[in-house]
Image (cartoon, rainbow, N blue to C red; front, side, top):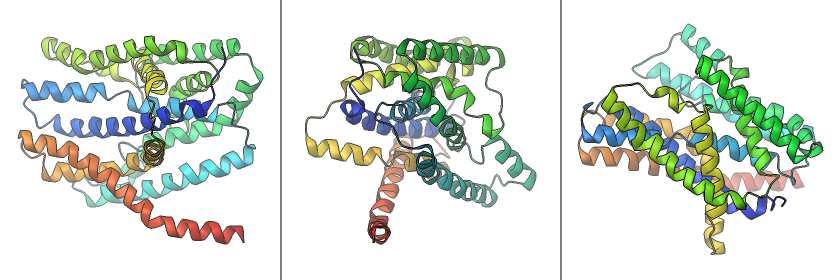
Length: 343
């Protein structure tokens, strides 16, 4: 049975982008609360569960990119491919790198020239920007991978993808998650990217029930499971949460297949809204640390249930609202530019 084509899963993919963006916000907001909450409290256990259950997000974004870029409908010339992705990734990368390095300069943590250069070398000018630096490497390899997926049988594609994933898991087991030069940041995510491409070439409907079970087990294991285990034993479980590790990879693949299969919206208007919000999730990802920082300065000084809930809701709503508002303000300018280009 062959692939149904990307259009059949488009609503689910847009919804998964939104879900993953929300999960990233939950993950980073919960991370800020970790040092504030009493270690043995129930809310600390809840916070650790929320944080752990959100670790699928970055990997799902990579799988979605592989699924979309390697799909059978993708036939754009290499030059056009790079031009479009430069506009989508390189320009935001430069802007947000300057912005967040500036934010570090004026914040209480500060940054020296040596620290800034070190951050640029490793592709982490701010804690979340590693993702953009990683995506640059994946986009550079994408045209070659497209040729591979177009010219090889599904069996060969599956075998090579499995080998890359196994090598990645082995490297993670042996070396953990070492800092990498920014141009090499994509390497641990290459298997996930290829897995997304492979899923675009096969019929994933039969995998739906299995993926649903694995998704539930993933949330239970990475959420309350590891949180309770770490609380009882005192064991540091950070190694389980590596994005390129076997556990997170299986969890993310299950979430993707489950979401693509089962998120269906009958209303055309609702589908349009989901696609519209899905298109802004990268910008939401890029801007949300500003509101995490604001929450840290205003709400995270002391725990109360109201402050705890308000921090998550505030960062979430503010991140989406600001990006959506900026999009609305930019719409007339973009329309004018498109009209000028067409004349």
